[in-house]
Amino acid sequence: MKKRMYCLALILTMVSSFLINVSLFASETDDRIESSAKQSYVFKTYLKSDDIIIQSKDGVVALTGTVSEESHKSLARETVASLPGVKSVDNKLEIKGEVPAVNTDAWLIAKVKSTLLFHRSVSATETEVFAKEGIVTLRGETTSAAKKNLATEYAKDVEGVKSVKNEMTVLTPTIKPGKKTIGEKVDAISESIDDASITALVKTTLLFHRSTSALNTTVVTKKGVVELRGKTRTVAEKSQATKLVSDVHGVKKVVNKMIAKYKRH
Image (tube, rainbow, N blue to C red):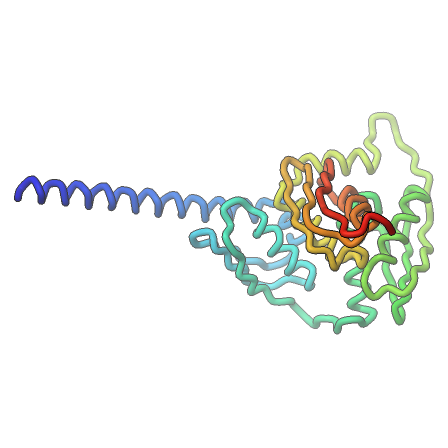
């Protein structure tokens, strides 16, 4: 009898110890998730002015607070969802202020601005965006004709844009000895962008572009190398996805394993 009681006590002690260790591990994981989200490139760059509270319990993350626009709400969710250990995300973020109605000029301006902001080859912060009845006008300064053309191409590929008037001025930059070019600065920044942020930026970029918004794409990032999986209707769509993703901040290489249903077109 004593031996049986001893064995039972030993088992209970072991189970209790196991449960305590599991609880501690879960707590550490939740702390790491919350910390990683706050320190991510997306939260420190794009969402730094938003009021977002991140709470993780057993890998289930709740996002509460306010953001300035709809794109920030989805960007926060995608970033957190891409973190190791996250099982699901309950996005309760609310948009602060008046939300532009869908397909209005204000709504279109916000979408074009966000889309340009995710691409490193266009000077998004120096680009002014205007819209009237679906016709978008771009103004500001850029450092090359190629970047100006790319800004036009990207803006045209945003859902709702009918046409683009690009009135940007192409400047010839004077680079002093030892001073980094804009491209070199972008490359330096890219080195510090975490994989979760890159995944979130890639997913949002594909969603914002009209040519890739309908694609069911799985995105996995490891040390800046992005792998795309899923299906496309044509090889052209697959190539377009590669092109757009290659120009997203932080992306070092794109491995496109998407399957094209039709080989031509």
